[in-house]
Image (cartoon, rainbow over all chains, first blue to last red; front, top):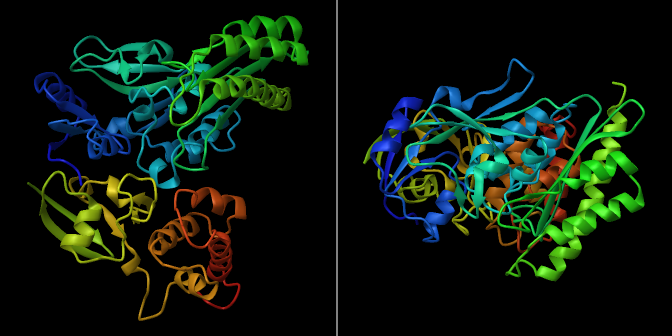
Length: 294
Length: 161
């Protein structure tokens, strides 16, 4: 059973912002509810008031912006992204990532932005969004601002959002041509699975099959996802070889700070970090070379 | 309290709901539609799966207050004129039911899947049903039933939808 609370369905963004800035105590944004209702049932969260943002028309929009970027309104569901992006050259990595979250039922309610706002170290959308240089659009008390997802997340359950602010959308730049993305996670079950380790990668190559840019991001092994910045230099200098992958996966494992908890141990997670780093880069590389010339 | 109006199995439902009532609470306790099962109530087991505006959802994670203007289909709404829905028929014929507790959720997930894609691969079936936990069957019979239902819905053995 859910504990008692008050509920308001906001009709527009201004109304939502007004409520969020005036009803300061115990007010939370409600989007898909797939996280917050579970937390409330478990007693981990006790909001007094939930502001439902699903009826705000512009928040349900999934669209392509003027520079080819993908814009996901805060109420866009994981399943909408999954089905829309499936098989699309530029965005298929997002589809693959979304498909790995929760279950069909959860994806049909849960939102992409909600997965980011929850700020779980194991949130599966986040490594891919960071690898793809996604930004959040924050509206509310101050001027609207854009912030990289990386900088939006502060720690487990913590973001830079201030009272009266909410995310309006996510903006994901269109990847350059000859780009491949990949996402891998390890968990215990195929559905409803909180990652033991997750990894996302994005590789762009030039016409000579050399790496122009590369990004690899790991989830569930630190308070916020970690990006292995050196991957780009190593891969552009050395190409994708056994040695270069070894170097990057060693860096990833050195950089990771996983915990031992009921899901896994620190030792095991560090081993898996290396394996997933190698595999995810190989997959992204393969997809980048397959799309080259298109 | 909030006034909401929505459809359940084609019938209009008007009720005054407490904000903390879930769709599952309303179906079972107010509408006496107890075919939808109360399992973990955390979204983990999918025994409470219903179809909300065409999509499979956990009724334990939807508020009654969120439903205004929506359309809900439950297991009770599937059979027509005392004839089982092809998915129900296939579950019975293929021994996909043992204790039966997961069955309404499994069936609703399957109906949502086949409405979206009448001809799924076995991989897709496994993906779309992955949330539904069954503690009896070992899933093999369920997958067989879903594949058979897909064939039946497409007219493979003369049963039409």
